[in-house]
Length: 267
Image 1 (cartoon, helix red, strand yellow):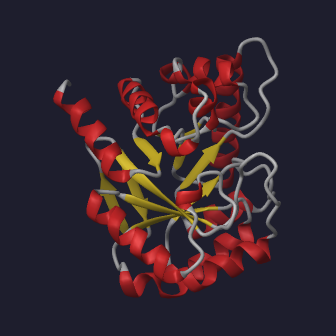
Image 2: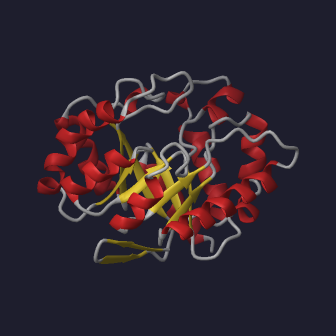
Image 3: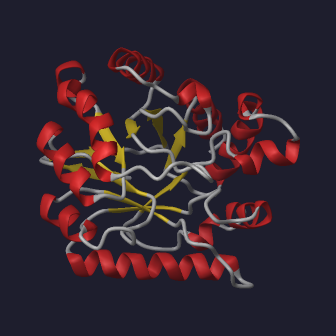
């Protein structure tokens, strides 16, 4: 996987970890919530030490039933963090979880080039692709649509084909695909998609990411809570790596790095 972020090219020859840092009061996994700059920077430091290649900052919860955060509210949570982020972490690759192009522009002004992580794949904000193209940023395109058809694998593949075409037409140079596990999908659909990742990701020149860490597709069938879902999460991470995933978006960086190491030992 190669990522060009600003004038720097990053080459990754093995799967990498994206560490989730939520600047929210209501994300589904309580341990991931941060409400002070010191808490955020302490977690970021620990994740970097544990081996995270990318830090994903999110200032709005996307869990089912969550309060819909406005662009201004999201920015007000992000601003104190990104305002001094580069003073503490000069060379860290940053991803920002937002579907607002206004937020993308503000973050860019604060920290320079970063990865846009858009759970709507550009559908929520009609300016998103144009802004990402103008700023020459990589973009995660996730599917949060409901998949209502009989063949969920085919439908998701077609969705990604459309997204790639729209992104390329707008001049977006780098796309990272994310199936959107847990978003408008049944537990059965989630596992069907997980088992078909090679077909879903059958595109050239795109990176492949999944975010399943401690999600309901894991803890609900087991009748446990997100707090107890790390072992099962790790099992599914290993399976996903065997399906060719490039990036694991996780809450538990050290554990994910161990899973990658185990996976690489068996290549």
